[in-house]
Image 1: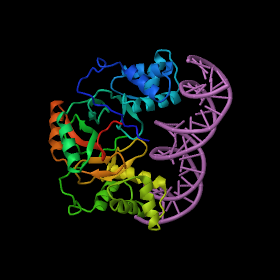
Image 2: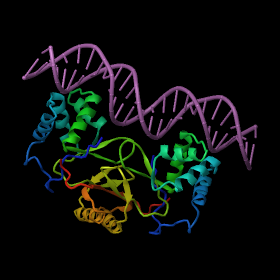
Image 3: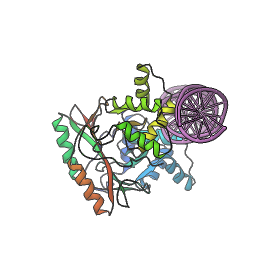
Image 4: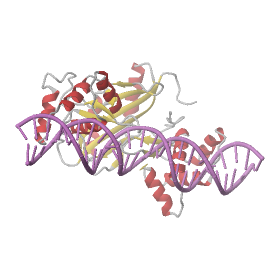
Length: 161
Length: 161
DNA sequence: CTTGGTGCAAACATTTTGCAGCACA
DNA sequence: TGTGCTGCAAAATGTTTGCACCAAG
């Protein structure tokens, strides 16, 4: 299944809600599928915009539970899939164990700095990558869709021992 | 568990066997753990250097089976973990479903072009990324260990509908 | 009524682990 | 004789699916 956002990367603005509330985007996508904007879906969308940057399904469910809201994992997974299709969130490949997600709507593609000692993930901004990406695609006769850049780093010097 | 290679990215040479055969690297790592270089481990190492670039556990097992060699998945997983520790292979995050691996020893960090239509993966070479990576780490007071760059592209124009 | 949504539990797929038996120093 | 390795089958993990029931037009 292809869950690449239908159309994201609108600009380099951080605050995209000035364009349109996310729930409107989501509603529109649901309508186009003949589906409904249910309370559970609203809760999930609402919770994830308040997650800091990267989140996992478990975390999202915990956050909801913390507010006294119970939503089943099945519903969360189903909803995250819809949100991906709508271009509102994006899967981020951080490790092979679990899926990580990130708010994606209106954002530039993901560029991450990952501290290997602590597993901390710091979003970074590397504007020149878009040009590099486009150049490479052009050389292959392709059209770039998005890219990912992850830097693994550590605090202490030297990578060995 | 941290499975980052103990020390990779030795140079930009493609053919690293001129430095040292991989099996010697692996043997040394095993010895340092008080473990043995068994026939199964040799078979797995041998098979994976002949895989073209990216491979999955299933594929590797099939390749072995094709030569009449049977090695259990358990052993393959255990061996791949050792090979990662030794810096000989590297996990590549291509999709969230399954782990993909790649020969890593002596290679520059992974830079991939992924065709979203066909799921084809083309290794690319983007030398300037190392400098970008190092600059970013320096700005954060960190030491770069490795990086990943993945470009998703398609043949037809436009990413939207 | 009909369509779709939810939770639960079962199913799945991949990876890990426990264990009995094997191999080699 | 012991240490480690293998295969098998069972367990563990994360995700998906089938189904019965619920909700809203």
